[in-house]
Length: 384
Ligand code: UDP
Image (cartoon, rainbow, N blue to C red; front, side, top):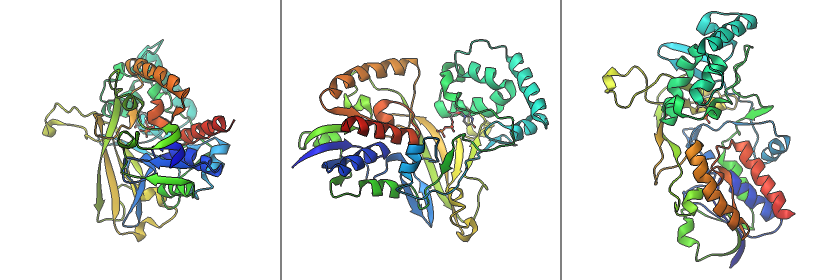
C-alpha cells in the first residue's frame, strides 16, 4: 500500500504531525528504531513511579496554543521545578535568586544583593563577552561562576568554559526575589500518569500505523509514500557525507533504593568540577552532573511516602559516538557551519517532499513546547 506520509521518529514532533494529518484522513506510517514511542519523553513505570528514561522532562511554556493543545492529551499537575545545587558541602537554591545570594554572601535585601552582584561583575572586568566564561562573569561575577556554573558546565559539555559559546547560559535567569521557580513560563507541570500516554493518544488513529524497532535505512526502498517527515539526525540522513555533527550524550545510572525519599527534591545538581584524568581518591567533585529522583515530579499526585522505595538516576555526560543516543546538539561555530552545509542539502530535498523536523532534524536544543509549536507550524504549511 502507498502511504500519504512516512514519519521517521515517534517523538513529539512526529506524533503531533502524524496526528494532525490523520485528522485530515491522510494515511500515515510512523516508524521508530527504538522499541517504544515518545522519543526522549518516554516514561516507564517502575514500582508505581513514572521514570523519565531519557532524563528529566518538565513541561513549561508560555505559548497558549501549545498549552491548550497538550492538555487535550493529558492532565498536568502543578509541579514547579526548583533544583538544588550542591557545591562540595555547600547547598544553594537554583535558579540564582535571593536564597542563593543569601547563602553565598549573607545579604538579605534585593538592594544588598544587587550591590554585591554589581561589585562582582565590575571585579570580573569583562566588556564584550565572547565565550561562556566571559558571559557568566559579566552576568553574575566570579563567586556564582566558580561555585555554580564552571564545574557543572565543564562536566556537562566536556569542554572548558572559555571554549564554549556564550548563548548556552543566556537562559539562566538571575532574580532578586526569593523565588526558586526555575522557569519563568506561565504554564508548567508534569502529565499525571507520565509522558508516554501523550504520544500514545496522538498516534491512536485508524489512519496511523506505527512500526517500532524499524530503521529508516532498512525500509526506505520497500515503502511507498508521498511525503517524508524525518525527525532523526540530519547528518545521519545524509550518511555523514560532510562528516558527523557533534552531540553531547548522557549516560543514566538508574537504581531503585529501599527508602521512601532519597534527596527530598526531584533535581539536585552537583556543581563541582570533575577531572577524568585524576585518580578517583584524589577527586574533590562528583563525576555526575545531577541526580534526579523521579517520584518528586509526582508528589502532588501520590503521597511519596506511600511508596516505600524510590528510583534515582545519576546523569553522566559524555561525548556522543555512533550507536548511543545523541541528546544535546553542540551549537558552536564549527558545528553550526557544518549544519549549514547539511541544511543546504535539506533545502533542496524539501522541494521534493522531504521535511526535516525536531531536535535532531534541526540540530537545535528544543524544549518540548518548541517542538510542538514547530510541528503545528509545519502542519499549517502542509495544509495551506
Ligand atoms: N548550568 C549551570 N549550573 C547548573 C545548572 C545549569 O551552570 O547548576 C548551565 C550549564 O551550562 C547548562 C545550562 O546551564 O548547560 C543549561 O542547563 P539546564 O539544566 O537548564 O538544561 P537541561 O540540561 O536541563 O536542558
